[in-house]
Image (cartoon, rainbow, N blue to C red; front, side, top):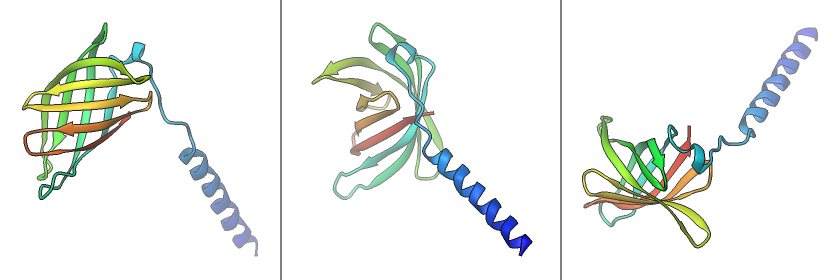
Length: 136
């Protein structure tokens, strides 16, 4: 009986630890601390006949006076990472803060900044769809 109580106790501790980790608040940042941040997530496509779900990572190198520069890395369907220069502006629209990015290769992104996520849409010559990135 003692062995079972020990196992049940260990399982309870594991459940409590897992719950505490899962409910931890997301990492956040402010626009003042935007330079040097990295965001990772997914870019999907809702274009008819051209489905896509690509992992993406955005690293912000500079953020001065509303102008941002960095690198967007897009992982291809074959699992290869391709890094492209990204630049854009931080704008306020309808009370929300938005990043309007242009990424080399004729890609554009409009992403709403919440402090812990960048959510919006991305568009290229053949793909258009939702983007969700979380602060790493």
